[in-house]
Length: 309
Image (cartoon, rainbow, N blue to C red; front, side, top):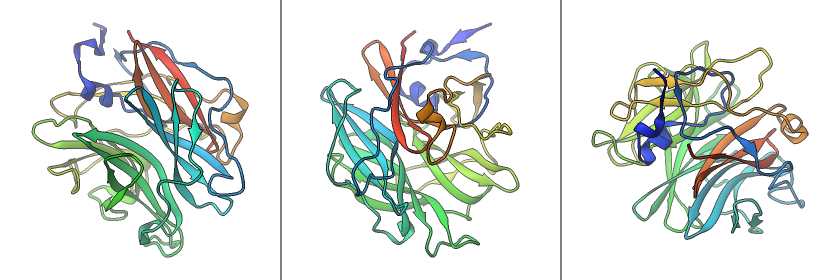
């Protein structure tokens, strides 16, 4: 029998539809939104100037606060170092950015590469930002590089306090390489906080893991294996799919898309720093529609929408 996610109400159900940039995906359930369509055929944010965002503006996190859309996005300079830019919008499409980043490389685990790929969630009056700290100077990896999932907190989205690495590279139960892409579920489940993230499994590449925490600061792998495995094709095209987890058991997969929701089509999604990429990180409920914000080819930001079912 075909069901929809309408029987799983609440924001935790929304977060269960995690929008990772995996390749081809499969399912028996339907998400609570219809087909995606681009709101703009051109990027809504593009590289500019000769400073912190001259080479790339991509992979955004977006929240709606008091009727205004606020975006944190990965900005990359000409040397390849990433920082987090900040932009605001009244309509969710036309954004105006600040002239300086709100977070730049400072910590040892951000040396050289910087801070990448923000994701946001709020508990109470505090915003929790998961991001990738990229050290390409003296990291612990065999090539002196490592990427690690990190956390910062803020009450205003402008001033951030680093909380450190929360899922170290090369030290997991199954993730034997880099860690990144942490998405925290916005409600407690069974008295704990939960997070989905990407790690590198031995001889398998990037896989999705699940971790739990009692305080949002210290995280532990919930399983000794990935919770969802990637399905890579031979072309390395990054598409967007969905996966549904049990609302009472975050480690139990109920359904998974059988085809992508979204894939590269526009020239600026196919040609950039990394070709053929739509990397969805931002999701906002806006009345009767959902807005999906994504990075195109590791260079620009785009936005798509789908109507609520």
